[in-house]
Length: 89
Image 1 (cartoon, helix red, strand yellow):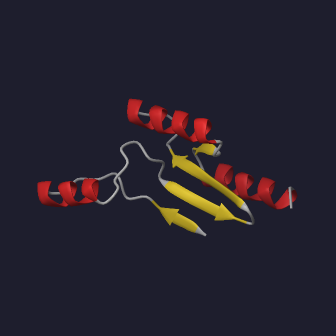
Image 2: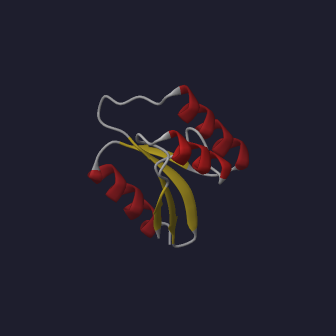
């Protein structure tokens, strides 16, 4: 199961207020992945993309909580992540 976390993008002020009130977490990773017993967060970046300060803080919170956090830059990297999880099974 892969869940998108829709934190990014432009929105009107009313929508932003509602999203914040209902749990928006600034800097949260793009995806929550639940796969064969593995639960972790995946941030999608381009080859030159860098994390924002809020994204680095979210990563630190994940590490503190013992949750995996991965940055992937290509579809092949994501496929490698899934293959690694399959191999550990």
